[in-house]
Length: 238
Image (cartoon, rainbow, N blue to C red; front, side, top):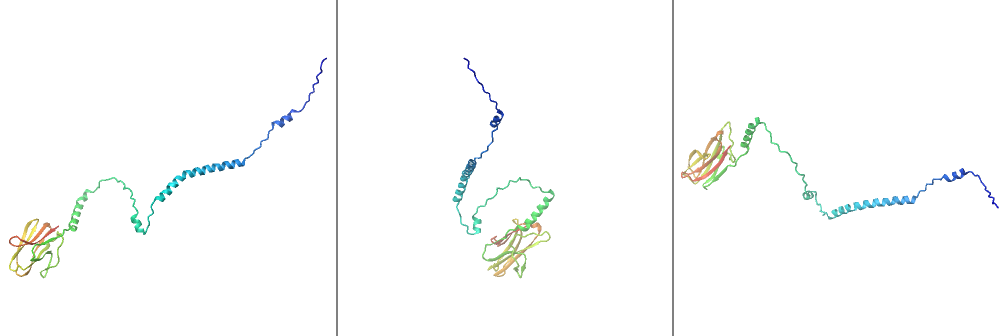
Protein backbone atom coordinates (compact mmCIF):
# COMPACT_ATOMS: atom_id res chain seq x y z
CA UNK A 1 0.00 0.00 0.00
CA UNK A 2 1.60 3.18 -1.01
CA UNK A 3 1.62 6.32 1.18
CA UNK A 4 0.74 9.60 -0.41
CA UNK A 5 2.64 12.72 0.82
CA UNK A 6 0.99 16.05 0.71
CA UNK A 7 3.37 19.02 0.33
CA UNK A 8 2.03 22.43 1.14
CA UNK A 9 4.07 25.41 -0.12
CA UNK A 10 3.48 28.84 1.26
CA UNK A 11 4.88 31.81 -0.57
CA UNK A 12 5.61 34.93 1.57
CA UNK A 13 7.61 38.07 0.99
CA UNK A 14 11.09 37.60 2.61
CA UNK A 15 12.27 41.13 1.80
CA UNK A 16 10.15 42.64 4.50
CA UNK A 17 11.56 40.35 7.20
CA UNK A 18 15.14 40.93 6.00
CA UNK A 19 14.64 44.64 6.22
CA UNK A 20 13.37 44.32 9.73
CA UNK A 21 16.37 42.27 10.78
CA UNK A 22 19.19 44.08 8.85
CA UNK A 23 18.50 47.64 10.01
CA UNK A 24 19.94 48.01 13.60
CA UNK A 25 19.57 51.31 15.47
CA UNK A 26 22.58 53.26 16.99
CA UNK A 27 21.91 54.22 20.62
CA UNK A 28 24.55 56.45 22.42
CA UNK A 29 24.55 56.15 26.22
CA UNK A 30 26.71 58.60 28.35
CA UNK A 31 27.93 57.36 31.72
CA UNK A 32 28.20 60.80 33.39
CA UNK A 33 29.08 59.46 36.81
CA UNK A 34 32.07 57.52 35.55
CA UNK A 35 33.41 60.48 33.55
CA UNK A 36 33.19 62.85 36.52
CA UNK A 37 34.88 60.29 38.75
CA UNK A 38 37.76 59.87 36.30
CA UNK A 39 38.30 63.65 36.06
CA UNK A 40 38.30 64.00 39.85
CA UNK A 41 40.79 61.13 40.16
CA UNK A 42 43.18 62.77 37.66
CA UNK A 43 42.98 66.10 39.49
CA UNK A 44 43.75 64.42 42.81
CA UNK A 45 46.81 62.72 41.31
CA UNK A 46 48.12 65.99 39.77
CA UNK A 47 47.59 68.05 42.94
CA UNK A 48 49.09 65.36 45.17
CA UNK A 49 52.14 64.94 42.95
CA UNK A 50 52.77 68.70 42.82
CA UNK A 51 52.49 68.97 46.58
CA UNK A 52 54.94 66.13 47.09
CA UNK A 53 57.46 67.83 44.80
CA UNK A 54 57.16 71.28 46.34
CA UNK A 55 56.88 70.19 49.97
CA UNK A 56 60.64 69.37 50.48
CA UNK A 57 61.77 72.75 49.04
CA UNK A 58 59.26 74.61 51.18
CA UNK A 59 60.36 72.65 54.25
CA UNK A 60 64.04 73.43 53.58
CA UNK A 61 63.27 77.12 53.08
CA UNK A 62 61.25 77.28 56.30
CA UNK A 63 64.02 75.46 58.16
CA UNK A 64 66.63 77.93 56.81
CA UNK A 65 64.52 80.89 57.85
CA UNK A 66 64.02 79.42 61.33
CA UNK A 67 67.73 78.65 61.79
CA UNK A 68 68.83 82.12 60.60
CA UNK A 69 69.60 84.31 63.68
CA UNK A 70 67.63 87.49 63.99
CA UNK A 71 69.68 90.51 65.05
CA UNK A 72 67.99 93.58 66.47
CA UNK A 73 68.57 96.73 64.43
CA UNK A 74 68.91 99.81 66.59
CA UNK A 75 69.88 102.51 64.12
CA UNK A 76 70.61 102.74 60.44
CA UNK A 77 74.28 103.48 61.15
CA UNK A 78 74.80 100.37 63.29
CA UNK A 79 73.13 98.21 60.67
CA UNK A 80 75.35 99.69 58.01
CA UNK A 81 78.48 99.00 60.07
CA UNK A 82 77.56 95.41 60.97
CA UNK A 83 76.31 94.33 57.59
CA UNK A 84 79.12 92.68 55.57
CA UNK A 85 80.11 94.30 52.36
CA UNK A 86 80.21 92.04 49.35
CA UNK A 87 82.79 93.29 46.95
CA UNK A 88 82.78 92.27 43.37
CA UNK A 89 85.99 90.62 42.21
CA UNK A 90 88.27 93.11 40.50
CA UNK A 91 88.19 93.00 36.79
CA UNK A 92 91.37 91.95 35.12
CA UNK A 93 92.72 94.59 32.86
CA UNK A 94 95.38 94.15 30.31
CA UNK A 95 98.47 96.08 31.21
CA UNK A 96 99.74 98.32 28.54
CA UNK A 97 102.91 100.32 28.61
CA UNK A 98 102.30 104.07 28.88
CA UNK A 99 103.05 105.92 25.70
CA UNK A 100 104.58 109.37 26.00
CA UNK A 101 105.61 111.85 23.43
CA UNK A 102 109.42 111.97 23.41
CA UNK A 103 109.34 115.70 22.65
CA UNK A 104 107.76 116.43 26.04
CA UNK A 105 109.98 114.23 28.23
CA UNK A 106 112.63 116.90 28.86
CA UNK A 107 109.99 119.54 29.54
CA UNK A 108 108.25 117.25 32.05
CA UNK A 109 111.54 116.57 33.84
CA UNK A 110 112.23 120.28 34.15
CA UNK A 111 108.73 120.94 35.48
CA UNK A 112 108.99 118.10 38.03
CA UNK A 113 112.38 119.32 39.21
CA UNK A 114 111.07 122.86 39.53
CA UNK A 115 108.04 121.70 41.55
CA UNK A 116 110.19 119.52 43.81
CA UNK A 117 112.53 122.41 44.54
CA UNK A 118 109.67 124.67 45.53
CA UNK A 119 107.56 122.22 47.52
CA UNK A 120 109.94 119.75 49.21
CA UNK A 121 111.65 121.68 51.99
CA UNK A 122 113.67 120.21 54.83
CA UNK A 123 113.46 121.53 58.39
CA UNK A 124 116.37 123.72 59.55
CA UNK A 125 118.17 121.91 62.39
CA UNK A 126 119.39 124.28 65.11
CA UNK A 127 121.41 123.07 68.12
CA UNK A 128 122.80 124.94 71.16
CA UNK A 129 125.52 123.13 73.16
CA UNK A 130 126.50 125.84 75.68
CA UNK A 131 124.13 127.44 78.19
CA UNK A 132 125.84 130.81 77.69
CA UNK A 133 124.23 130.98 74.24
CA UNK A 134 120.59 132.01 74.73
CA UNK A 135 119.64 132.31 71.05
CA UNK A 136 120.97 130.99 67.73
CA UNK A 137 118.89 131.18 64.56
CA UNK A 138 118.76 132.02 60.85
CA UNK A 139 116.91 135.07 59.56
CA UNK A 140 116.71 137.16 56.40
CA UNK A 141 116.55 140.61 58.01
CA UNK A 142 117.53 142.50 61.17
CA UNK A 143 115.51 145.29 62.79
CA UNK A 144 117.35 147.24 65.52
CA UNK A 145 119.84 144.38 65.84
CA UNK A 146 116.96 141.90 66.34
CA UNK A 147 115.94 139.21 63.84
CA UNK A 148 112.88 140.17 61.82
CA UNK A 149 111.87 136.53 61.37
CA UNK A 150 113.15 132.99 61.56
CA UNK A 151 114.11 130.73 58.67
CA UNK A 152 112.83 127.27 59.58
CA UNK A 153 112.87 125.48 56.21
CA UNK A 154 115.18 125.00 53.26
CA UNK A 155 116.05 128.16 51.35
CA UNK A 156 114.90 128.33 47.73
CA UNK A 157 117.57 129.86 45.50
CA UNK A 158 116.51 132.53 43.01
CA UNK A 159 117.84 132.52 39.44
CA UNK A 160 117.57 136.30 39.17
CA UNK A 161 118.98 137.50 42.49
CA UNK A 162 120.97 136.38 45.50
CA UNK A 163 119.20 135.45 48.74
CA UNK A 164 120.37 136.99 52.04
CA UNK A 165 120.86 134.63 54.98
CA UNK A 166 121.84 135.97 58.42
CA UNK A 167 123.28 133.90 61.28
CA UNK A 168 122.20 135.54 64.56
CA UNK A 169 123.55 134.60 68.02
CA UNK A 170 123.06 136.00 71.53
CA UNK A 171 125.88 135.34 74.03
CA UNK A 172 125.76 135.92 77.82
CA UNK A 173 128.45 136.34 80.53
CA UNK A 174 131.46 136.15 78.19
CA UNK A 175 132.55 139.80 78.17
CA UNK A 176 136.14 140.26 76.98
CA UNK A 177 136.34 136.93 75.15
CA UNK A 178 136.27 136.18 71.43
CA UNK A 179 134.33 133.61 69.42
CA UNK A 180 134.00 132.83 65.71
CA UNK A 181 131.20 132.47 63.17
CA UNK A 182 132.00 129.79 60.59
CA UNK A 183 130.10 129.11 57.35
CA UNK A 184 130.38 125.73 55.56
CA UNK A 185 129.01 124.62 52.20
CA UNK A 186 129.10 120.91 51.39
CA UNK A 187 131.50 120.35 54.34
CA UNK A 188 133.91 123.02 53.08
CA UNK A 189 134.71 126.18 55.09
CA UNK A 190 133.97 129.21 52.90
CA UNK A 191 133.72 132.05 55.45
CA UNK A 192 134.97 132.78 58.98
CA UNK A 193 134.58 135.90 61.12
CA UNK A 194 135.90 136.74 64.59
CA UNK A 195 133.36 138.01 67.18
CA UNK A 196 134.69 140.26 69.98
CA UNK A 197 132.31 140.16 72.95
CA UNK A 198 132.15 143.62 74.56
CA UNK A 199 129.22 143.08 76.95
CA UNK A 200 127.62 140.54 79.27
CA UNK A 201 124.67 140.25 76.85
CA UNK A 202 126.11 140.45 73.38
CA UNK A 203 124.31 140.03 70.05
CA UNK A 204 126.44 139.05 67.06
CA UNK A 205 125.47 138.28 63.47
CA UNK A 206 127.08 137.48 60.14
CA UNK A 207 125.43 137.24 56.72
CA UNK A 208 125.91 135.67 53.30
CA UNK A 209 124.37 136.38 49.91
CA UNK A 210 123.66 132.97 48.40
CA UNK A 211 123.33 132.76 44.62
CA UNK A 212 121.51 130.19 42.49
CA UNK A 213 124.78 128.35 41.78
CA UNK A 214 125.47 127.84 45.51
CA UNK A 215 122.83 125.18 46.12
CA UNK A 216 123.76 122.46 48.55
CA UNK A 217 124.05 121.60 52.22
CA UNK A 218 125.10 124.44 54.50
CA UNK A 219 126.32 124.60 58.09
CA UNK A 220 127.02 127.58 60.39
CA UNK A 221 128.82 127.30 63.74
CA UNK A 222 129.68 129.41 66.77
CA UNK A 223 133.07 128.19 68.09
CA UNK A 224 136.00 129.37 70.22
CA UNK A 225 139.67 129.41 69.30
CA UNK A 226 140.08 125.80 70.46
CA UNK A 227 137.26 124.52 68.21
CA UNK A 228 134.71 124.06 71.01
CA UNK A 229 131.23 124.29 69.44
CA UNK A 230 128.74 126.57 71.23
CA UNK A 231 125.96 126.23 68.62
CA UNK A 232 125.39 125.06 65.06
CA UNK A 233 122.63 125.23 62.45
CA UNK A 234 122.24 122.92 59.45
CA UNK A 235 120.20 124.05 56.46
CA UNK A 236 119.87 123.40 52.75
CA UNK A 237 119.69 125.66 49.71
CA UNK A 238 117.58 124.16 46.90
